[in-house]
Amino acid sequence: MNKIEPYQDQFPVIENLIHLNHAAVGPWPKCAGDAVQDFMRQNVDYGSRNYPQWMEVENRLHANLARLINAASADEIALVKNTSEGLSLVAYGLNWNKGDNVVGILQEFPSNRFVWDSLADQGVEFRKLDMEACDDPEQALMALCDEHTRLISISAVQYASGYRMDLARIGDFCRERGILFCVDAIQQVGALPFDVQAIQADFAIADGHKWMLSAEGLGFFYVRAEVMDQLKVLQYGWHMVDGLKDYSDQTFSIDPTARRFECGTPNMLGIHAFNASVELLLEVGMQNIGARVLENTRFLIEKLSAIDRLQLRTDTAESRLSGIVSFSLEGIEDKQLYLVLSEQKILCALRGGIRLSPHFYTPREQLQFAVDQIRKRSR
Image 1 (cartoon, rainbow, N blue to C red):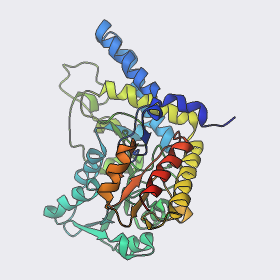
Image 2 (cartoon, helix red, strand yellow):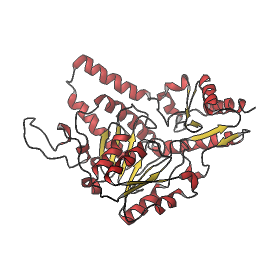
Image 3 (spheres, rainbow, N blue to C red):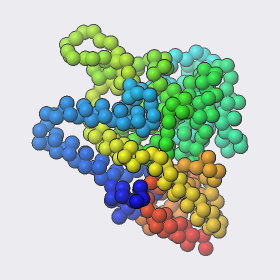
Image 4 (cartoon, helix red, strand yellow):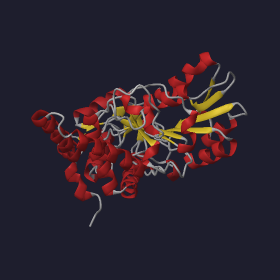
């Protein structure tokens, strides 16, 4: 029995359009919608009576996220509003010295550039690699480092081109030299297996609303236990203290786990949606999901490469493939082609070209239809 098709019933979106935009905002599976509806009914009918059970869901989400990324413990997982917040926890949690530098990539999504640029007033330099000017980006990143490099911060997968980085290679380099390693994992987690221990990441952050198929406004922040105390706690509140029972207590200690970075009341509605989606990913299995995502990518690359006047912007080397395929078509502006595809109910994105990002459940016939529509415009 096929391991993927039984789960397509979780995605009614395939009856309404061709969703090839998971690298932007993914649709919810039915289980996430059901979880939110159930949570809503509990609130409407019984108020907060079931709060102890909601806290159990919160605890399960921490544990499930740890499984999803192979963290050593759920204690290394904090829930954050978004990737930008997690990156800011690193940027403003570390004690910097004037003359320190951070190494990253020029073509990164703004979240993984602006936060490091903002450290300039502390005397911290952000060194940006131009990926379009090198053949070996990992080596080029390493070459930008020196004795003053405190941190390398990159995306696991480049958001526009879909270029997948060799994270283990960079992790080895960082660990050998005592450089911290921070990964924006939003374009990999949920699409392909992601193992924080195998890549030796110190920090990893991702929103839940893309490949993890959940709601906007909630993501995870992974921090390796051995480096957790290197980060100052920047926000204080009732939720980030250790074992608070008496709200009138005038003393407190910071939670020893990553929950120290969760300062206040949790987003319980988002937690219910996120946990349901993550449990679905774990049930299907990230090896199965990753295999199908790459099958879809290979299919698109093969079919699109055969279209006259089409220029792939995605690296076709097997080790660089992700869930993203980007291209342009000579003779038609990207924006015009985007509008044409939108009229055919093909949901994609403009990111320096046309970006397609199907997920594991996407039917093959929908991919073929999208390719056929693109081919029509090449004549």
